[in-house]
Length: 165
Image (tube, rainbow, N blue to C red; front, side, top):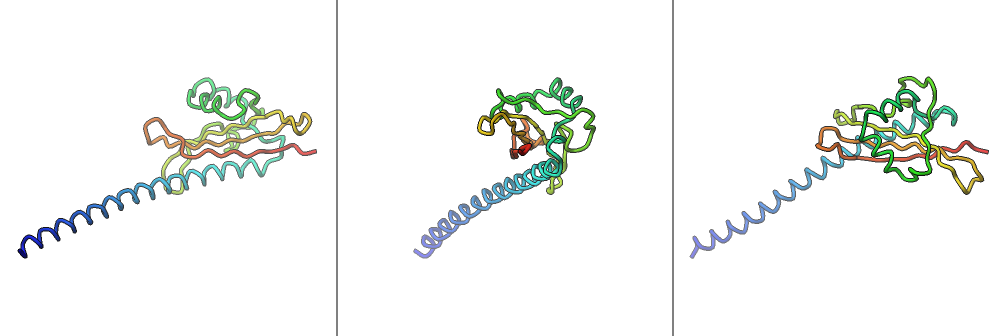
């Protein structure tokens, strides 16, 4: 009788331990995804901060670089067409902006987790009906993970800038 009770106890304990191990596995995956999203959000925030420091007229992407990326990077074009108000928006460019971080439409940056991320930047003017013809400049940042098949979007952030009265 004691052997049967011992076998039942071992079976119950084994099932409980397996359930705990499955919980640890899903917790590890959740923690990994949260760390990736945190690193990508920091990259997007840093990119948006670059635009916050500029005057309204200086917010834009380099004209030549944007044309090159639009002609050669299908992912960038698909992302741009998928943005909110894509039909009523026009790209805002700055001639001779150069290769500064706020001028490049696509960059590969290293996050705080020491992994590389593809950072896409879109600067668009959208006509704003409420403000009587004044346009609003939207800067959208999409951060992708190029190490995963299909380079899925990790984070997308948008900030709006207004020329003021």
